[in-house]
Image (tube, rainbow, N blue to C red; front, side, top):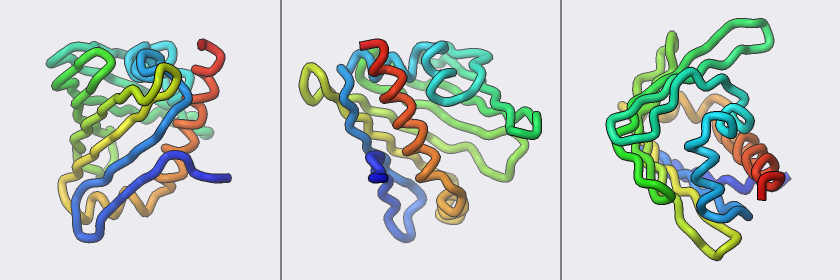
Length: 154
């Protein structure tokens, strides 16, 4: 199956660019990142806290097939409705350092939109370590779920 979410990782750099076009109106795509109930559905995680505002924060928790809980959290530095979210992302109890994420939402037509994510890691080594995981397949699967779930809300 074609991967609709594109991940660009330039050799020797400590960041990645993720781009995905959705068959969704801009407002609905943005809502998928701002509405806790929708976030829980497409991310397959429990939203413990989601403060959508400048200087807000969030906390999510997921449970693996063995019943172990895994948390991740961050600070929302900038929240511009239907335009952008700038936030940190940290996985708890892992060797991965905090990363900085810039999410930009763009209207293409009344019924289509684009998400651009620029993720900056602490080092090239940290970025490469993340890319060795099934990160690319995982984000593509999550974005496919997002599209499927929001198609029902259109």
